[in-house]
Amino acid sequence: MLRSPIKRILSFYLHVQRDSNHTFHGQASTLTLRDFVDGGFCPDTANYQTRLISGVSSLDELNDAENSKTIINNTDLEKAKQNLINDFDFVGIQEYFNQSYIWINKYLKFKMTGYKTRKKAPNLQKKNVYLSKEDIAFIEKKNEFDQELYSFAVKLFKEKYLKDIKPIELINLRIKRFFAKIPKSELIP
View 1 (cartoon, rainbow, N blue to C red):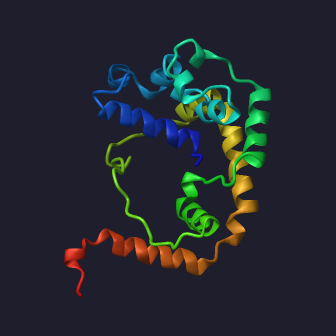
View 2 (view 1 turned 120 degrees about the horizontal axis):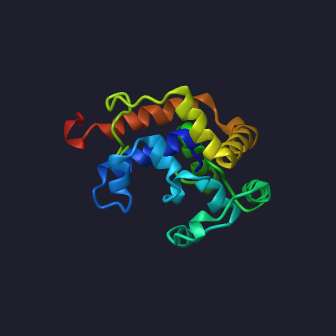
């Protein structure tokens, strides 16, 4: 599952601020988002998705300070794109989560039962998080390869998977999710 780099980084930053046990909690608690991204100490804020999908870094290697500073280039981006096409049976998109869920269930021949959202981060509007156009442009520049990879993945998702999703399947999933949120003790037998 890929996610919009801007949303992913903002979500990560807020997660690290909330988690006092996180390695970068101190920095996230004292730095602005822009300074946190610009710090160069956290591999999650610089082309993270491209690093992993291209194979430049594994999760273990990203924890190594030296490896996490490896510069990503166009060759790595092209490798990541080819990996999405050739080495993944499915590429989901966070912003199309319901459609991704439906498609993967069809692909794996699972009986779709709906899903229950757990551990959802607080709504960004409730946190009064505001990103200026300059902040967004800065984060996009720092994650230019992730931006391009994400756009490519969305296009791939729409061309390859989205056409297989019927509107009724989305309606059924929404109904199942609605009932998944109601505790069984509150359902009328």
